[in-house]
Length: 307
Image 1 (cartoon, rainbow, N blue to C red):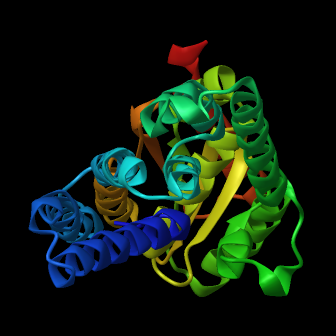
Image 2 (image 1 turned 180 degrees about the vertical axis):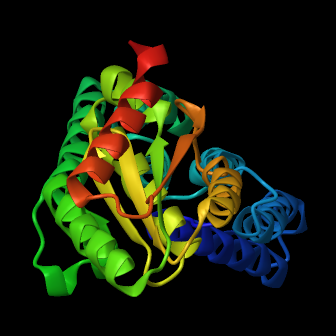
């Protein structure tokens, strides 16, 4: 199971924080405060391996982490002299595990609740305005960081950008593969994959969630494919996966394997992804242009029920 490295970092840091806090309370003999962080650390310690193995939906691990951050703030902040310093913890965690619109809405609603929890002395118009302003600025900075172009050598996933080819590039590479298969008398199959939830994510939640899901989908396909397989987005939300040296039976087996891997991709907003698949196998003597036309017709067939 492929997990976003941002969420993985948040989960590891959350586990370390909960464990360290439980140990600190033990060393300070605050025995009545040990149980909450210890339970949260145990929940994350169990859910993280299950998530990586594909036995647990990633959203549940995210919920454990977010609930843990909220509970930790509610328990620890009121009893400390500098309780306002804890206010950033739930905001940071929500920005890491939720989509930006949901994180922004949650944090805006929680600012007055946090001030009330810290005590009447903190419930002022100035603190309320400052909390909302910091929430909006933090969300805007995260959005700028996500959308800012990065040089290729600093890319977090440089190989992913190369493996998910553009429409023009995948068509040119397929022409080369057709010529190679014909010259060497080897089979060639292509999986046509349509992900309906990408349409839903784009329409209801914006391009950011759609791009996140698309990148996660590409990463999952890459991890579950051979090194010489080629993935490209032939049109919006429709992908081609070229399988050199694969006949129809092998392509069908690959389609089933990918379907099981793709369904493990999930977001709280739209649930698990589903894939609609068609297999096209190169026929002896078939020209590249005719094969590409068949692939386009297969993509049209997948889109027909959604029209």
